[in-house]
Image (cartoon, rainbow over all chains, first blue to last red; front, side, top):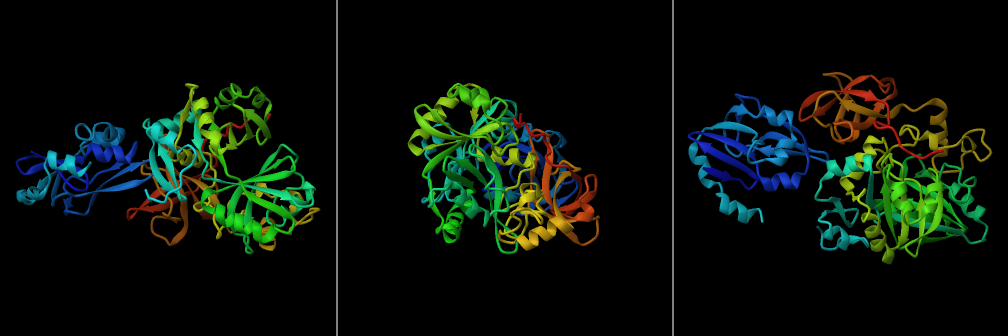
Length: 120
Length: 376
């Protein structure tokens, strides 16, 4: 199940774990990425708080936690190659996985069609 | 984009080239083109880049007496440089100063025929023109020129411009010539803001698009946005007014003492006589208390302008970063900032606070990337 936020993140959910990344639209807006900072495995994230940082040549942008929960895995390959987040943000450029405190937190998020309309 | 954003004469061309446009100093300006900032930056260092810098101010000073030395003498009351000794066909760097020696703006001065042509920063051009009028109207006619300004920069710039005007090959760094480019009278200087060899080309607004299109027919010339212009100048260790220098920094601590020649210093034939001279000449004699330095973060995280600097992992603030980002040619983060002189030596380790953590940086010589100017 693929969900999207108004902060231009995507979540792919399997059971109570969601993979999180930035959308293609967000990656296009940010431009060439040169640095990624991810949360630590085991970290507690609170919805709406800064969870990761993506930086282009020009600027640093916070990536906010779209849901609350515990980080179970992070994409070390994205840290080693920030450009991969720009070139494949909804695939190889995923950022981290989070175990949701509450699976119903996803209910308020957009589906692909709604997000495509939102990001227009 | 604010609906009242001004357009440069190349606006339609930028849109046609697919530029991302952002507001800058009241203008809609291209921040990058579809190829992206990183490739634009590297292409400029490898071949040639064409920048629209028409938002910058071009101001002409002409002596009312008809004697160009009178305009030069008048301008020397505002700038700490040798304007009188500026030969026709040459250009120099300088700065406008306030009474305490702070930098109101930095600029280029060209001696061109009977006039001095100033190129000033976009954000300051109205204030600069008003300041010049307030101080120099008695001796000079002052005109803000309605002209476009294109910068052609990179090791391939000479060959690309020589296709339109072969005589540019004879120009050296900081030379100024009036040349015919596609039937337009162009004021060409061999200078720029990237650390590369290159030219800045002033043309009438209605000739800018044809000139840009002609230059872009050369495959080696890519259009380059203001994003890469900033990363190029940062690697070159060049100051951005409003960030690295401003009304609270003086030229000595900013590392710009080289622009103040002996003739304007104590003991010189035309010593002082510019705003803030007492403070600035004292600072040259005794040395500044803080200095602008290059900084190389030890980790991969860029350190941005505004970050606070510390001597160690726990102590009090000692300075701040004024510009910072990622240097595409170095494939590493770079920054500039101010530090107390005792900590400003290359190799000194300091710390910057980024997102609540103190990250180590090493003071580094400027420029980060060697300049490619054609001096000989």
